[in-house]
Amino acid sequence: MVTYVLTVVIGVAAGILGSLLGVGGGIIMLPATQLIIEMDPAMSIGTTLFAVIFASVSGAYGHFKNGNVVVNYALYTGLGGITGVLIGSYLFKNFLSNNTAVLQLLLGLLFAYMGFRMGRETIRQWHKPAPPVAGQQAKNGTNPWKLIALGLFTGTLTGILGIGGGFIMVPAMIWLFGASPFQAVGTTLLAMFPIAAFGGLIKVYHGFVNLPVGLILGLGTVIGAQVGVQMSRYVNQLVFKGVFSALFIYLAINYLGSVRHIIL
Image (cartoon, rainbow, N blue to C red; front, side):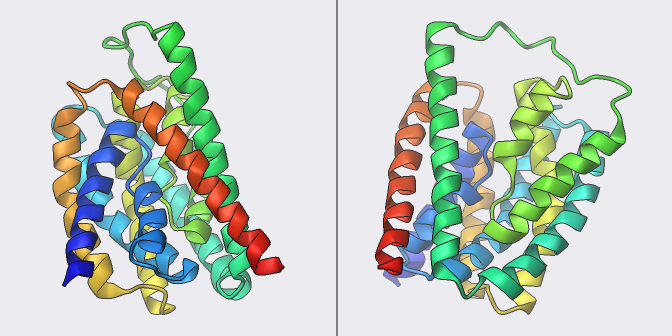
């Protein structure tokens, strides 16, 4: 019973924080299912990806209602992501699922990257706040092959690590394709849906999903994502980014330290 209550809390928190930070709930659920629920890395990756299906639908719906989704961007990126997640899932099942040390190493590097990138953004924005972006709009006539390539890359990572790829898609949507921050988050969440759906169902088929936990996590993210969409208009994202930068660096140290323990 306690495990299921914790699972709901993790899902709600992941939905809220994923919507606020634009990184997707997977980056929160992945370490939580390992450190709190004590899943092994392979099962945690599969269960997290399955739950991201629900998080992406809920978050995308909320942002779509607020006009924050560039639909054609999401379609092209999602199309490339489907191919990528098939590739990533194949690599995961055949080469990585039984290699705990490699999975922990990859996760450690992922969280190190997330922590340092988010910390750098926080410091930069703290000293020099970003200019208003209310009128910023996505570029017209963007080459769809660039969006497909973005989806292919992030989809492959999703199939391997079980996360939605928002930490790559969101900055790419802003820097490469001219989307506003809100558009980038909403568009990414919609693009993540087909990627997570294909990847999550593949993980179910391969036996890497704890369905009860995945469904409860998914329900929690549905609730949390809607709360996060509304909160995103009022909260100071710099505070959240600073806190989670420190958390991600801690997780990176934890994962990389466990690799050393496994090898020795």
